[in-house]
Image (tube, rainbow, N blue to C red; front, side, top):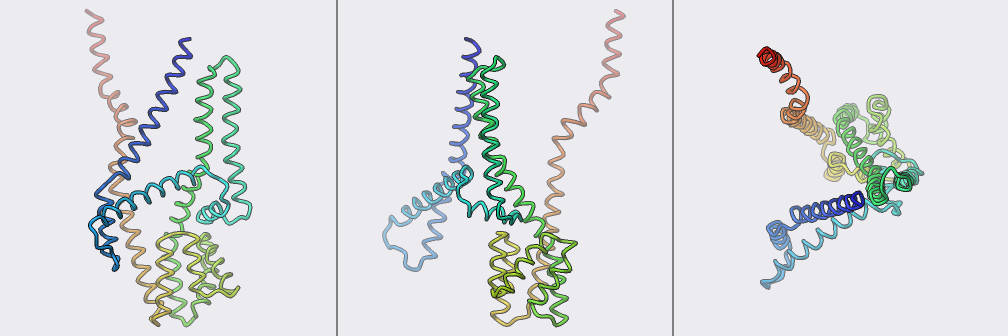
Length: 315
């Protein structure tokens, strides 16, 4: 009887904790009247045909709040659903996975990681190891965790792939500048750089190979680079695509634009390294407190503690 009451109490505490956490997240992240007023004011100034009445700002603020809440709900639904194959393929392409059956494998892994923990805890609940209520609660928590783990892995893979592309772009731009200054066309330069970077930067070389195939199939360089930017969804690649497109439109030297973009990327890399160096002093505090300080305390205090113990034993 006490075990059942304790299990129900644990479930209730967990449900209350999750509910309060979600409500606080909504409150701190989205219930901000100043944010909605500022955005509504900016929208009003950017719109040349704004409404003259006094209630337009409040209506815009309410519309902005509604759109923000709907976008959050859409993110939550996307995190839990698996039926949208086009979106799954797009996110896998952002991570550098272009296999035609990758989204099916991802769906199967999510289903397996969801069903397997429920079956395991159902079997455990049928025995005397855990109570049924506790086994049901642990099974639901494990199933939700198993459902979310592949998406967390995919998000991490997307960030890692974007970092690889961002770090390899300056080298790509340097080789492109050399090829363009040597008299090669933009298409020939992309073909030559794709071969040269195949060993050093295989991820970028693979993406450039896709760009080259698009060009060979009849697409223009602008369209191919725009698809490259949409496929990776990275700001640096999108900026590169915009630079090449604007240079071709206005007739400026592409090599000068690429040289400036390469310098900017290296400056951003230097700033990121400095930021990580400043963060290291803060991040090292917890390992020092958990690992170094206890050992130092034992080494310094143990001789005095032993001497005090021996003095009390003599008395």
